[in-house]
Image (cartoon, rainbow, N blue to C red; front, side, top):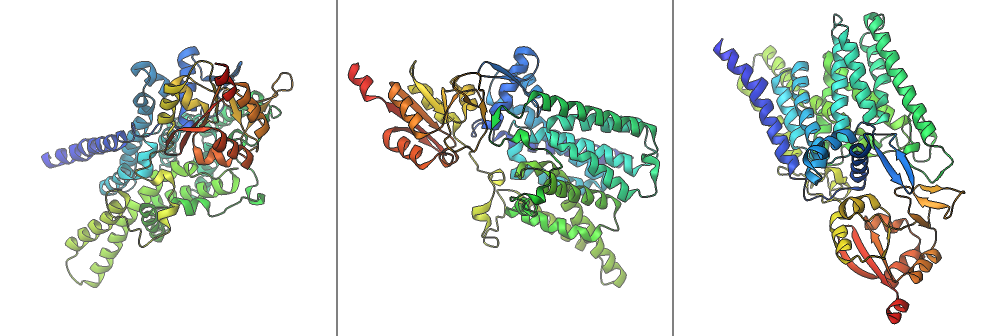
Length: 536
């Protein structure tokens, strides 16, 4: 009895506490070194709108812009800002909390599906993996989405695994799905995915579809989704913007007919690091247990259907869109270690070669160590075996990634800025947060990002962020330079910013303006008009 009590305390309290502390320590390291990103700054400004008026909004020029995607994301950040005041720690604290919540859900869900040892390995992998550390210290939506997706799937598993489940679980699924959907609307694919999994795993067992509560729950979900999509359509008229934008992306497009269709994008990029390619190997090995283990079938069907939907029906390929799959991939990889060893042991017992208990734990230890040491940025990095990973690794997988230098360039701009100076910038939100300066102009002579068009007022074109006047050519840029005494050109991220300009604009900036400050992917240029200097 005493031993059982100690075991319960150890597995149900001490181990989760250790995992939570480990996750917090590793993610806090990324809070300060990395400046606020463009995506983070957008959500932060929406959160400040919540504090100001009770709902997330931005001012774009003189217009109020209401949020229509990530609707739920600003509220935890707003609460953190209200309680702690503005700081980079405060805006990223909700992401840390969601990440810690996710690691605890992984532990308890994996223990329920398999056992405590699988749960410990899966949770440790999540704690130390650079991809999870990055999003656990970034205030954009992926950490929050992953937490709610995991909650939704845990309830969905319970509904399918247990025919005698109580009616309230259907409404838990509805609640968590709605939270997930309002974190990122494309996560609506979970509904058809869970339905397909139910068809395959519970074929001819229709208790889940004959239940009146299931129909009420599904009707509520469909109603909420329909209202949100209608609201978004009415809020964003398709005639006021020029250029492609993420807001146009929706599911159930015929992506295979597009020229940028890439059927292996997510499979390829998910394995684009030393840790991920090792874990991917274990996920592939786990297919051996697809038929014999119901929980493995559930997880594999979830992963496969999600990747298919993301690849076939989503109008944009980006690594972060698949981040919410990470907990399930890690649980599968961890479970494969123990299922594989158990299979070997069962074979050895049949042939009666020798006592296998010690051999079992040696195998488990070695396989677990391979996963943990390659997942950790401080462990094994076998790049000599995978030389292409040295150049192709996505920034989200890099433990020492410093991001774009919005903070340092903003500090330099604030130091040298004088009243009356003109500022040209492409990413005004981070600078607005750090300095209060949101710029005057936005230059784009090659249309690669959204600009707003309003024929009722001059100028006709304005940037999509804060409504800055758009300069459409090198000639218009030159006119601005000669009309003002001092003009700043902020180029962050520098490489991407310059790629969006024509050669004439690039030469005008580099040859006519003075480079005042330079940092990682950041440049700050200044134009001082000789005519104004002479007059002075």
